[in-house]
Structure formats: structure tokens, C-alpha cells
Image 1 (cartoon, rainbow, N blue to C red):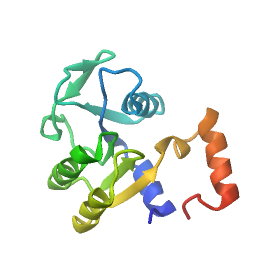
Image 2: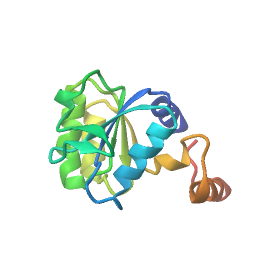
Image 3: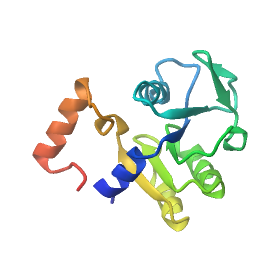
Image 4: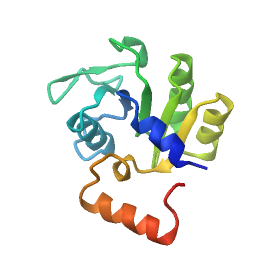
Length: 150
């Protein structure tokens, strides 16, 4: 179960790798990357098949990062997420966000087995201050119905 403490720990990270930046502009990983960058985070785009995204370098793997990441967000299919989580743990990254659509019971189980502090099936956009647009309404609604992490 995701806790507010885990979310706060992740949000306090300053260097975040985003696995799932894509050539397809409609992919949510791109939106996450842009929002984190806009909000002052040092973000690293990860995609083994791209070299740049909107003028920024895209790294093919975590091994290529110029400095260590404090956290990693996965916006990739669950079939790829399990191996990515293992790579994340091997690099010493303890804070992991499994964006909706990236998780499965198996991926979450792997995070747990590896001792990672992970957020499962939450949308990071509901927690990046200031929360804007539909995400602000979504957060309000989840608080109203008691689904907001405690």
C-alpha cells in the first residue's frame, strides 16, 4: 500500500530518472518529464532507442547518467518494468514511482523483495506542487472519497 510518507520521500528527490520518454508525443512519460523539469527537478530521460528529446540528451540506460539519480519514475509497460526495477535497485536507487499502467502484482512484488521504497499505481501529477488542471480536481476527489494516500 502506498503511503503519503513514501510519496513525500519521492517528491523530495532532486535527481529523477524518467523511464518511458518516447518519440510518441502523446505518451505520459513525456508529460511527466516536462512537468518535473518545469518544476525545477534535475531529470534524466531514459530510452534505449532515442538520443535526444526536445533538445535534451536521452540516456540509453541508467549506466549512462552523468550523476546518480535519487529516484526513478517508470512510465513503461509492466513487462519491461520488472527488469527496469532490478536495474534501478542495482544502481542503488531506492525511491521508485510505478506510474499507473507500469505496475503489476509481479512488478510491485519485485520492488518489495528488493527493499525499494515504491509508489504503486498513483499519478505523480496529483502530488507535484503546485498541482494544476484536472490533476487538482482528481486529488480533491480522491481526498473526498478517501482514496488519497495517508
